[in-house]
Length: 120
Image 1 (cartoon, rainbow, N blue to C red):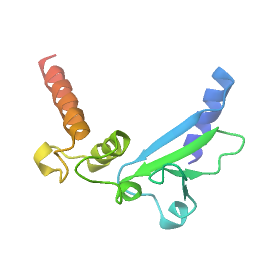
Image 2 (cartoon, helix red, strand yellow):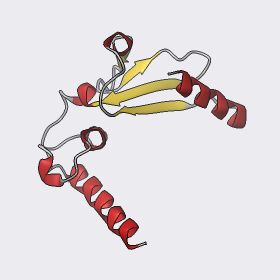
Image 3 (cartoon, rainbow, N blue to C red):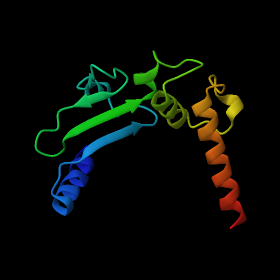
Image 4 (cartoon, rainbow, N blue to C red):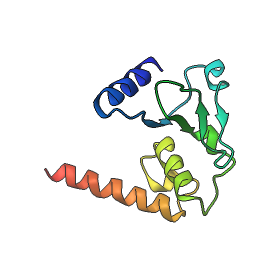
């Protein structure tokens, strides 16, 4: 968290605007006490927010746990992005909800980029 605060201070020094932060938690939080300090946003309950007075405009975290009640065959595109990112699946077949259109699009983008990278 200290590194994040430092990044925000650097952004403020450069642009003179408090940043809006979005963190994808891939894996899990460092400890459950830290995780419990976050509250769900009222209008998007799969986004967790924390206090950030003086160093960011808002700080939001998303994780596999925060979206577990929102994962389904046809997901909100942002939930699908979180699902895809936090799952770290190496194949589309290994994803339970691989039929979601956004998940399929994200996988095809990654696959195309990997092929491009291999040919360079």
